[in-house]
Image (cartoon, rainbow, N blue to C red; front, top):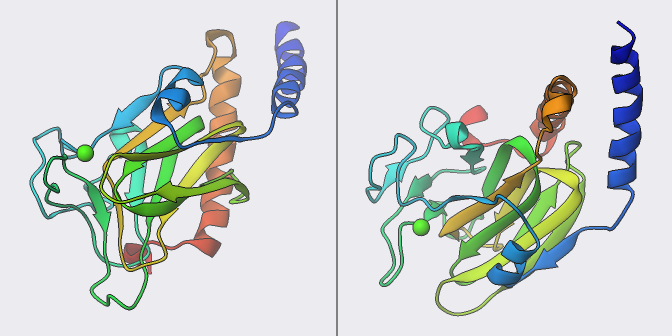
Length: 216
Ligand SMILES: [Ca+2]
C-alpha cells in the first residue's frame, strides 16, 4: 500500500524534468529526423486500413481509418481519400475540395501522443504540431517541385494533433511517420491514466477548432 503514493509522487517530477529541457526541433531531412528518433512507425498508404493493397479513390472515413495503426486522419471538408499514385511514387493520402477556390487540409490525430512526427509529400506545404490543448508546438514549411520532400518535428512536449496545410484546396501526404511516447513497464498504470487525460483534453479542445466535415 505504501509504494503507490511513492510512484505517483515521483513520476510527475520526472515528467516535469523531461518537459522543461530543450524546445522542439524541426527537420527537412528524413535521414536526420530518423537519426534523432527511435522506433518510428510509418503509415505509407500503400495498404488500406483493412490491410488490403491500396486502390485509387478509396474514401477514408471515421469507420474506415488508420486508427488501429495509431492515427486517425480527417479533413475539414470533403474529400479525404487514398488517390492514384503520381508517376514514380506510391499511393498518397489526399484531401481535396470540389470548390477549387476553397481550402482543405489534412488533420492527423494520434491515438497515443508522440515525441516525433513527420510527412513525406510532393510540392510545398506546411506541417504544424499541436499539444493536448491544441497549442502550437512547432510549424515548419518546405518542399519544392516533384515528390519525396520531408518535414518533421521532434518535441519533448507530446504531440497529439498534426496538420498539413498548403493553403489551397488540396493536401497530399505520401507517407506519415510518428514516434509514440513510450510507456515504461513500471509506470504502465500511470502512463495509461496520463494518456486518457490527454485524449479527453484533446477532444474537448479539438472540437472548438478543427471539425472534420463528417462531424458537422
Ligand atoms: Ca505512399
